[in-house]
Every structure is written in C-alpha cells, then in structure tokens.
Length: 347
Image (cartoon, rainbow, N blue to C red; front, top):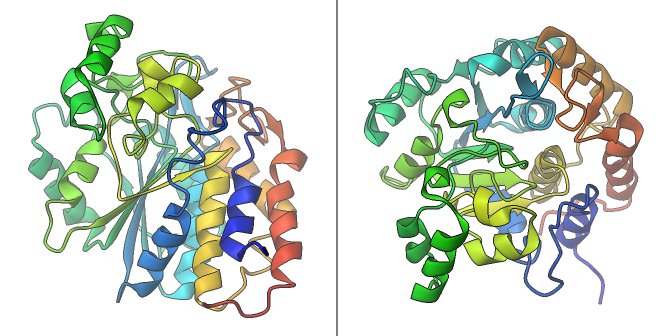
C-alpha cells in the first residue's frame, strides 16, 4: 500500500534522531499516540476562513553560557512565519524577553519585521497574580484576533494528582504510583529534560492554552514537541510518557492541545506543519525555505544576535539539539527532493 504524502512527512520528521525514547515501547509511545494529528492540524489551518495564528516559542537553558534560549523553537517559528505569510495567514510570534532579540533579528533578516508582530510575554513574576482570563486578555490586546495558537518547543507545567486523574483511563493505582514517584515539590512545575526546575524563568504561557478552549468560538490549539515536557504533551497519558522517556514521570507536561505533533526535533515538526499546509493548498514550499544555506544563515543571525545556544552543548553554536547543521538540515533537502515528484497534491 502506497504511503500518503502526510505519512511520508511524518516518517521524515519523526525520526528519534537523539534517541530520547520517543519509541521505547514499540507499541505504545509518543509517536504512535496521535498519528492523525499532523493531517488534522493542517486541515484545520487550511479550512479556517481568515486564519490568524500565534506561535509561542522559547525554552530557557539555565546551564548555558550565558543562560538564554535554545536554537530549537525560534528557528522553527521563523520558518512557519516565512512559509505561511505568503499563503495568506496572519502570523504573530510570541516569546519571553530572553528570546526577543533573536526572533526580532530573524524576522528582520527574513523581511518580515513589519508583517509579523513579535509579542514579548510577561515574566513569571509579572504574571504571578493574573488569572487565566487576565493573561489571555493581555495577550490578545497585543496579538489581535486569533483562530489558532501553536506552542513550539515550549515547556509546560508537569502533572498534579488532579490532572493525572482527569486523563482518560486513569486509575487510583496509577495516581498512587504517580505520588510515589514524583515528589510534591515537582508537581505543576516546568522541567528541562534533565529534570531541572525552570518554572520561574518562563512566562506561564500555558494559561493561554487553558483560556483558548473557553473562547467563542474556541481557538484551536496545536502543540509541537520532542521530549514529553512541552505544552501539548498532556494529550498523551502520563503513563505512556513515563514508560518511554527518561525521567518522563517527572517532566511530563499536563497541558493538552487539540492537536499534537511529536517530532525528533521540534523545529522539524514546524517544517512538517508548514509542508502539510502547502500540500493541502496545492502548493510547494518555496526553494528559499528548503535551502539549507539560507536556513544556516538565519540560524547564524539569531544565534549571534540573541544569543541562542544549542542546549546539548550549552553554548552558542550553529547546531540544534546537538546535531551538526548538515545532519539537522537533511530534512529540508529530502523534502525538497520529494515534493518535486508530488505534483499539485490537494486532496
């Protein structure tokens, strides 16, 4: 049976290139949890009249020199803006102050500074007393009307006993196991993959995703992540993340999204989402988007102006998640070659 273009896309960007454990259990894992969500997210974007999309990104790396944001996330957010603005989407990017300069420099270098607003999120301490509604109203007052909200490589708070019990299929035995394995001081906290607590270094942007479903009509939410600790991963049962990801019981994010895209590298998930939208519109991604040298140049600008760091290396580098750029960018050239054979796919 011939694979569909969407199945090919998923196979391309869901490679567990960093061996994080996305497929530790071959039957029930992060990759198999939401197999249809890429297609569904793309169709939602394409079928919505006058789509207005906010992409929230930025992940604080405390062990970096200097402490700052990482390269996975901002580069993918810029790619989404570069890909979707020409297709008629209104785009807004949002991040914390520690990623503002990097994204601003990327938007300027891509010629999008005037077309794509950049919203700087309130700090953890600025938003400390705000309700979910307060946070939402502050955001939309600057971002404008939204139809879709995307979290790209954006850490979210971990589970609590209450959030775990609210998941489909949860049992009392599982809740007891959770409380045995996860100390109370690590409930409802934002964790790095190493288990470090960075809650107070991040804006509590998960409140946007909690508020989105309360809007009329609801704002559609999409999560893109690669480790289990990102906003959106609450759609996957805690026990599945626990079983597959090292320290998964501790870091698993409790916040679900309507659609969840799990990738080997989160930026790859953004590339896949953009490619899927273009497919449904009967278009190909422009050659400029799939040019590794152009992507390398934009990464260089963002790393230097930010700075941004590779989180594995802990220092500014033209790499993502420890991957040399040539290996990281293979997904662009492979999709460029594949889309040339697809014709005008729009079914």
